[in-house]
Amino acid sequence: MNLSRSSFVVLAFAAVFALAVLLTARRMRTTERHTFTWLAVCFVIAALAVWRHAIDEIAAAMGIFYPPSALFFGALAVLLWLVYRVTLTVAEQRQQLKRLAQEVALLSAEHPREDASSR
Amino acid sequence: MHSKHLVVLLAYNEEACIAETISEVRRVVPGVDVLVVDDGSADATAVMARRAGAVVVSHPFNLGVAAGEATGLLFAERHGYAALVRIDGDGQHDPAFIAPLLARVDDGADLVIGSRFAGLQSFRSTGLRRFGNQFLARLLTTLCKRPVTDPTSGFRGFSARAIAFFGETHPHDYPEPESILMAARQGFRIDEVPVQMRPRRTGTSSLTPWRSAFYMIKVSFALLLERVRTT
Image (tube, rainbow over the protein chains, first blue to last red):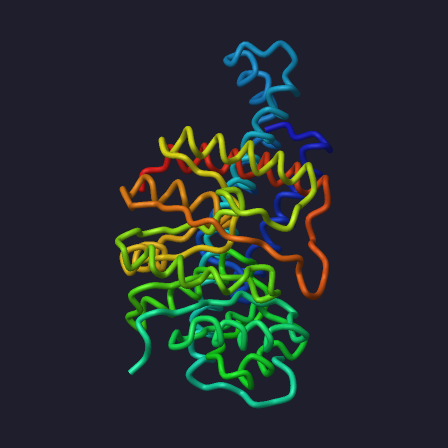
């Protein structure tokens, strides 16, 4: 296999990114599901670095004349999907947080504080 | 043993007038229970309300008017109230109209809207806000297939059935217009009672002309979305 210098740069980037993801997972700062997703992204980046003509073949299969456009399209589609998933999670957690605050408020009526301010 | 009627006052930084509003409610409609939902006030709203004799529930931080109303409904549902009237804590809603709203709920209505445009002359808001209100009123009248004259009024009464429903399923962002459409889709009886609005006793409105226009667009979108929801 003949790898160019640019391939090594991209492979190094994918490796560093994967290492960062794994270290974050090791410190329990993310969930297994998100770890898996980001490791999969690292794997795809590494695969594209090794298989250098993949973008050309994918672009041809999709009928895209300029191969980098296929890369941008693919990256944008994946990022859009990830951002959309994040907004769904934020909305769900906003609802959960609101409900939790309401339950705290209802409990505050049963155990009122008589301090000078409400804080 | 508590009353079967609950008056919910929504308050955010209203320490200057909340006690007076509570006193006025107690004077005009004696015998009702008064709950103040303190929406994360930074001042002494909760303390002043408690001293004035109201039960107070305090959000740990500001959640907005929709969550405030929902908290009042949850409280009413858990304590078995037969009817609830929600008013603002800033004194804009005249407590003299609480009794007619409760009477209409006792008469079988599920959601009673205190309408500023159903006959009585009220404190006059800006032209842009009146236009926005009329636009939403027409939209809601079309979507609900019944006349709605004041879709943004926060002066509203709920029956036990409506309390149970809205306690669990409450609109996220625009409680007044969205809940009217939700009630219509549930087959609830919706009535309107003419009310008068007063100028607020303290503070200023957060609605600028731009915000009013943007509010109208967002509410219209939310209503169209609500129309196609599954529940």
